Length: 210
Image (tube, rainbow, N blue to C red; front, side, top):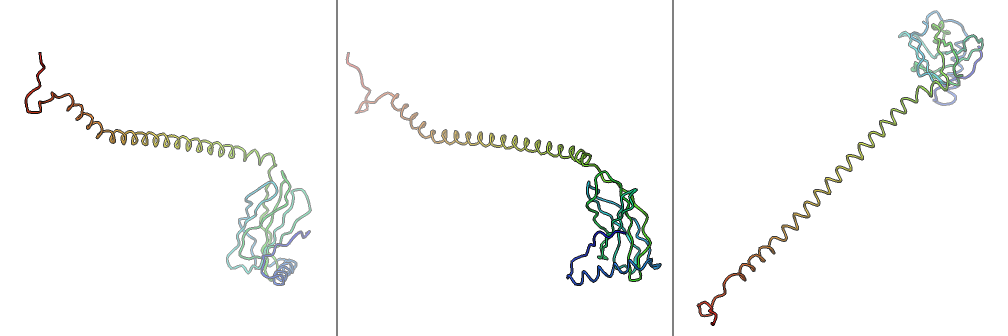
């Protein structure tokens, strides 16, 4: 094994170092017959340079940590990741090479040693070009949908503005007509009085002299 890194959940620095060293010492003791190998080891969120490994353990196992080994297929060099947090059931794999096959094992660690390794899980990281190609259609569809929504909103706003203008114009014309009605009535009354036959001051009709 070539230890590469040790992930320690932050508590206080002395306590973190203590638990990290404790897990390493337990792992060096060898197999613990009381521990079962982790189950349902799965690789998720596979990216070009990273992935996430998840697993499960039997309830009641006296686990104080986990050891994850990561190995390129057909390459003897290993990366060992120590995970001290006993509540987590996942670990991030980082600094991976694109278009490369990896083999992952997970072991439980107790005070008495380590469990047998889990069943090996094989996965391949995608190429950068493949990842971009797989993301492009979704991004284009999203952009197209966004453009359609924007166009629909613009049309709706224009229609509402036009209706508001029509209603405002109608109200203005109605107010003008309503204001002119009294003047029209006065004019009509005046015109009717002027057109009527004038009466003699003494009550008789005016007669023209021949």
